[in-house]
Amino acid sequence: MKLENYKTIVFDCDGVILNSNRVKTLAFFAAALPYGEQAAQALVDYHVANGGISRYKKFEYFLSHILGRSDVGDAEELKNLLEAYADKAWQGLLACEVAEDLAALRDKTTGSRWLVVSGGDQAEIRRLFGVRNLDRFFDGGIFGSPDSKDQILKREIGNGNIKKPAVFLGDTKYDYYAAEGAGLDFVFVSGWSEFADGHDFFSRRKITLVDGIGQLLQIFRFGDANR
Image (cartoon, rainbow, N blue to C red):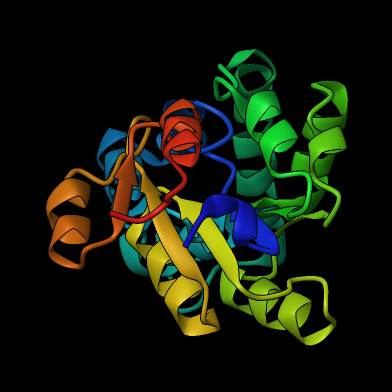
């Protein structure tokens, strides 16, 4: 299908709009470091292997599985980890690279509604996009955790905000499964992804692969977003 024919284009944030995956990986390590380097690295490994899942779930996993808590720990401990992570990540998010040609793609798809559906914290992303003047592109809204991507997509389809045909631009396996479960087409954006096996995984499934938004714009100019 031609990109201009999609009624809705859904974007992941980290690794698609922003070159921020490394920023967040380092923030996870720093937040968990008071528990020891081994525990911090185990959290990073889990984070990278489960890209697209919210920080809430990742820190719950850290407490219950990596630290071996009988539950996820007390609410204050989880809150402190989340705050430490957010503090470490924020400055990097303010400075990281924005996808090239994002504005040009918006100009070429004026008939499409744009949304962000991220695993990042919703309030943080909305604040960040306001500061960086990115919110102007996303007329359909900016959404994130603690709701999961599956929950957000189901809700926004149900309330008519996401109209089909729609496509999800993501950089993780979880993005693909969320899109597939919601009945959206999918494009894998590889350039900033931490999904090491992404090219093989998506090539086998005949999913469109692009290095970044700029390449997607080139495909648009040829009139076809699938190959």
